Length: 433
View (spheres, rainbow, N blue to C red):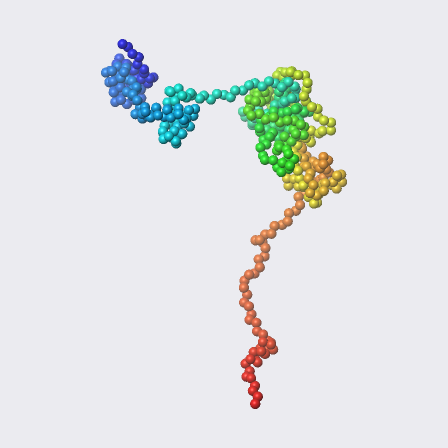
């Protein structure tokens, strides 16, 4: 009766080499070099092959229980205790509990194999989180996705720069602006251009970069006013009533992420064709037809013809919206100190802030400064920093002479009352008879 003999790949390779020795095409020493064995070991393997055939090449321990195997009674006790008390526990946690509370010390992987063999545990495979494609918004301006893309835009020899790209969720209309880094100023300029070209959107969809949102604790003023901490970009959006929505993953704002891929392919090649290697020239290319060509190719009509963009209100200056604002206190001499710069408030302001009043220092994107009090811009001029008082230099100061001088002994004059009293004490008393 024939039976099957299971052989590993290593054992099958040895069989092929042993047959070459038997045929006389190779020597034992040559086969030993091919198999990575010593000459003596190869002779022993060849001897077993001649005496036992293919069975002699199979490992001797195959089919035998391991010398380090746990006793069968121990395995049955562990599995029974698992069923009794730890049913549903993972192998790692169950092995810890069995060792701590029941005294059964078994490795987690050993317990895992026992449970799988008994059908009490299944391999846990981590599946990717299920994601569902979100439908586009129906209205142009209802939601604009905004993100920065760092890339070698000018080729491998050029430095890495960043573009801020805004893509409308409903239509795919995009706006791109390039800068050195994804800074607050670059994001402000991008939203400024979008607001001037299309209007103010209802919401922007961004990541959780500190340009858009902040995790700092609210200040006392913010707690009293009941507002959440906001970045400079967030304050600008708040004045325009633009909601900032943050995504938890890049896939959530996949429209702008895919737009980055298109831009990294087409824009890089266009810069190479034009021979452009500077940010200013690249922005001119973006503004003068390149983005319009992408919009004509990839934009689509929205589901609804109603435009959700709001026009910029009359009298609103966007340069005074997209800026940095900080609060300062007016000093007794009607000066305001801001980042070691001093501003003298003119007396011809109406209303004129009083000392200890708070004013808003506004720095525009062109680095110009404005002082605002009660929604009125103040007249002021920048003055030089006041002279600092000279510090007391201990090393240069004249130190007093602390050497002790010999004191001259005081000698009272001869007519001093003390001498008269002393004389009276030493003279003999006069007696009367």
